[in-house]
Amino acid sequence: MDEDQESVPLLQRILDNPFILLAIGVAFPAVLYLIWGIMEIVSVPLAN
Image (cartoon, rainbow, N blue to C red; front, top):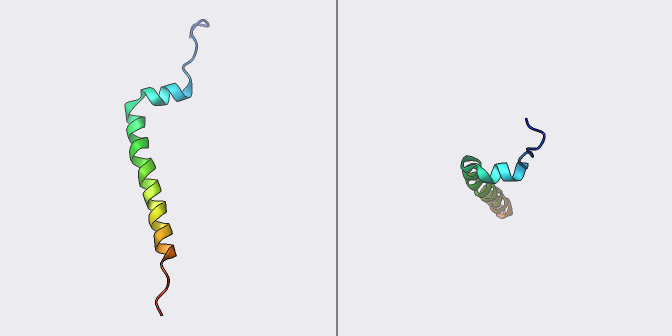
């Protein structure tokens, strides 16, 4: 690697990769909805 050439920052490499953005765009909402669903199930009162 040439010493004059700067390395690309990690965040720029992530934002330039469409497959990583796709994975984040699918995984992030899925995890949030999963957590939301678990919170909803836990908040349901038990039947007597």
